[in-house]
Every structure is written in structure tokens, then in C-alpha cells.
Image 1 (tube, one colour):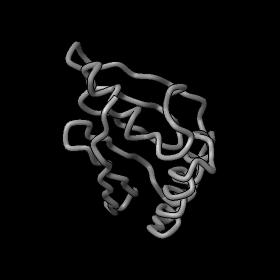
Image 2 (cartoon, rainbow, N blue to C red; image 1 turned 180 degrees about the vertical axis):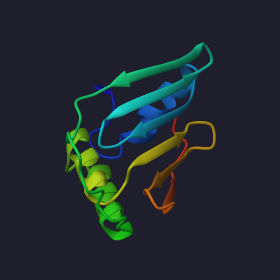
Image 3 (cartoon, helix red, strand yellow; image 1 turned 90 degrees about the vertical axis):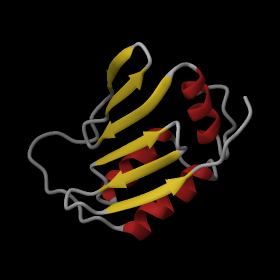
Image 4 (cartoon, helix red, strand yellow; image 1 turned 60 degrees about the vertical axis):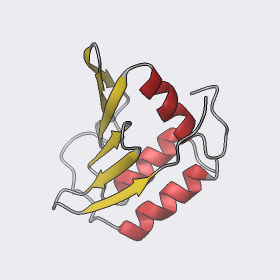
Length: 122
């Protein structure tokens, strides 16, 4: 993560993970649990939860999600700020397909927003 550009760095991080054998990364919000599917098996990472206890799940807001993505892509937010904004936009899970180079952001009622990212050289 430290070697990625401040602006537009995600494709570089994704490519490094892909080259290391990661094919898929699934994030669960608001728990900030991240599941990595690798050529050597699955690995789970537990981050600091965004919230705890019983919560109302925010309604899926595609516009707010796209705004959070563009803010992050411009280097104007930290990763934890992006995760909080995605949760506030109703994202409960997102799947990064490192082979197809796309991310599927999902709400709890089956809503989805799909975004492709560019291939980069590392």
C-alpha cells in the first residue's frame, strides 16, 4: 500500500496482489473483515470495525458511493474514510475480482454497482 500513488493507486495495489497470487478480495462492512482468496488458500484479515452493536443498515445510494469512489481515486480520502463513506452509502460488501479487474459493490437488498479498473504495469 505504501508504494502506490496517492491519486489513482488502487489499480497498482490490485496488480501487486494479483502477481502475489491473490485472485479475489472480499470486504464485509461495517466489520472491516477482508477475505483474500489466493493460490495457496484463503486468508482473512480483521480490521477495526466501523461500528458495533445493532445498527440500521443505510439505504444503498449509488450516487454517494460513486462520490466516495471518486474522492478516494483523487487521493482526497484515506482508506478508512473510504470504507466509512462506502458503508454510509449502503455498501455491506464489495468483491474485488483481480483477474477480471472489476469491483462489485453490494447493498443488503441485492443492489449492485460494478466498476472496472485499468490494467497497470508494476
